[in-house]
Amino acid sequence: MDWNAAIEKHREALTHIVAALVAMAGLGGQFTFFPQEGASPRGLAQAEKSKLSPALQRHLRLAVLRLLRPAESATRRLIIALARGLVVTLPRPRKADPATPGKTRIIPTILRNGVGTGITMPSAIPGGSPSACTKPRALSLPLFDPPQHPFRPRRPKQNGVPRISLPGFTQPFPVADRRPPAPDDAVDAGRLGRRLEALASALDDLPRQAMRFARWRVRGADAAARDKEHRDAAGAQGKQPRARGRVRRVWPLRIGRPPGSRRRPSHEVDEVLTAAHGLAFWALEHPDTS
Image 1 (spheres, rainbow, N blue to C red):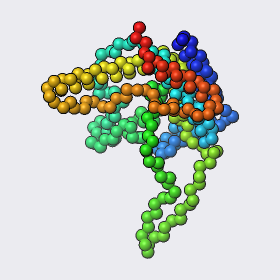
Image 2: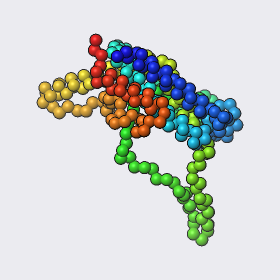
Image 3: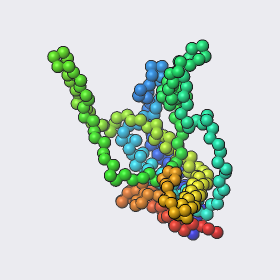
């Protein structure tokens, strides 16, 4: 079978589907904006410039999500199929930089004559750092299916608010009935737009994403080899081996049907997902060792 031709065929189909999803998200002037909740008065004053979040009508956002989930799953499986037979060499681990952006920086909140007062707050809190109001960080397409949580309890719906009163002095205020969600309600679509951007970026450069997956596979093999050496050394000394490090994922795909799949296919993305799922499973079970 010509793997490259099959992957390219499905990649082109997914590219057209993503283009249609982007058009759906901005069709007919439905893509509006509203200020973020919890913004400071100064941020509300600058809402026209930088403190805006995209909003879509609820029914339109759900329609995009119904097609976005299977498109993400299909793209993920194309990446796994393309990574078949790739050989990578991991670079040397770099030393940790104390000024890494991923770490939480502690800065003084009040300065007097260039000296802090000792009152500090993390930079992630709004107002703690000028970088807190910057553009949200771009997303990358996850290489693994999200785990299933079949026994996770559902969050109870809030149908009231606490009413605190002092008998004889105050009266409980009336509580208005909560209006059920309507299809035309405006909901935040900022993360939805970033997911579309991440999916389009992955489809534009599948070989780079395949190298990401190949590097993850090599790291997992190295970690498994180190754990085996640790167990063998502990067994030779007659000791019980201790658990080392964190729990690592060894299989990128979800057991059962892929995320976003339907029992009754009704769209082109469902057929692409079925074909890409077969390619990914074949690539994982029959790796190219030549």
